[in-house]
Image (cartoon, rainbow, N blue to C red; front, side, top):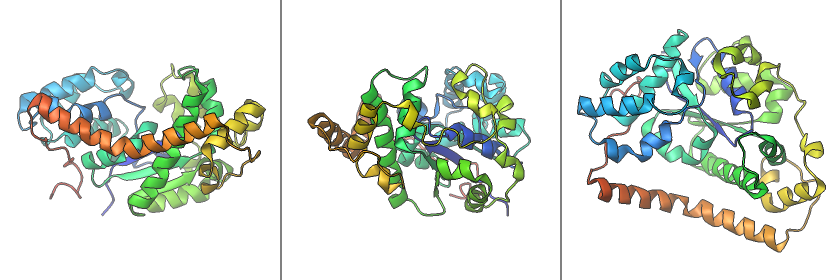
Amino acid sequence: MPSDRPIFVVGCPRSGTTMLQLMLHAHPRIALPPENRFVMPAYQRRHEFGDLCDPERRRDLARWMTGTAQFADLGLDPERVVDAVVGAPPTLGSAIGTVFRLYAERFGKPRWGDKRPTYLRSLPALLRMFPDAQIVNIMRDGRDCVASLKEAPWSSADFGEHLASWARAADASLRAERRYGPGTYHLIRYEDLVADPEPHLRRLCAFLDEEYDPAMARPHEMARVAVPEYKTWHTRTHQGVTTERVRSWQQRLTAGEIERCEAVFGSRLSRFGYEPATYAMPTPIDRVDRIRLAVRDRLAPVRVMANDARAVVRTRQREPAVAARLTSGQRLR
C-alpha cells in the first residue's frame, strides 16, 4: 500500500529548507506548501481552543488559522478550509493536517506535509500532533548559514543571534538523531545534495517509501508555484541547483567572524563533517556564549512542561486530543 505519512522538512534557517521543499514538491505524489504561521502557535494555544469534539470549537480554530499571517500564500478558499476542518476528526493535528491535505489536493497529490525550519526545535510537539510523520532534516555548514542569515532582509542585526540559530539547530539535530529511528528521521547535508542531487534524492525517496522522480533534481521548475513572489530572499530557488554557495563563508564573513563562529560552535562543526579553518581559542565571551547555549538547550524541555502546566491552570481545560487521525496509520488508534 502506498505511504500516506506526513512529511516535514526542518533545519536551521538559510540551510536549504526551501530548496528541499521544492525538490519534494516536484515529486508527483508529494505537495509541501509555503511556510505558514499557525502550526506551533495552534499547539501552544490548544487549551484555549478546548475540546474539539464541539464542531463550533473546530470552526473557531479554523477561522483563526485562516486569519493568520501568510495563510493566503497557500492559495486555498478560507470558507472551504473552515468547512473541511469542521468535518474533520476532532483533534488538533487533524484540523491542521486537513489544511495541508487541501493544499495537496490543489495539485492532485495524495501526500502532504509542511516545511518550516523552526520545527526542528519542536519535534516532540510536532510528533504529538502527527505521530506517524517523517522528518527530513537538512544540515548546512554553520558558517554558511551564519553568512546567509547576516544578509537576510528579515534577519536580526545581532551576530550572536545568528550563531545561536545554527548552534541550537545543530544541537536539536544531534538530539533528534539519538531519539528517533531511521523510519522517522532522515538527515541530509546541503553540500552533498547540491553536489550530486540524484543519489541523495534516491536515498531520501527510499526513506519515504517513494519512487525517485527525475523532476526532483530540478526544483527551480516548482519555484513559480510554491514560493511567494514577495519572498525576495528566495530568488535563488528560481535557478538550477548549484554548488556556488558552498563554502561561500570564506568570502562573506570577516576573519573575526569566522573565528567567532568556530570558537562558539566548537565540536558541532566537525560532528557534521565540517572542518574548522582557524582552530581559534574561545575568548571569555565565546565561553559565555557556549555555556548559555548549552543551558538554554537543556532547559528547553523544562520550559515546555512549565508552559503546558500554566496553560492548564489558566484555561481550566484538561489536555485536549492532539494526534491527527487522517492517515492509514493513525485512523485505527
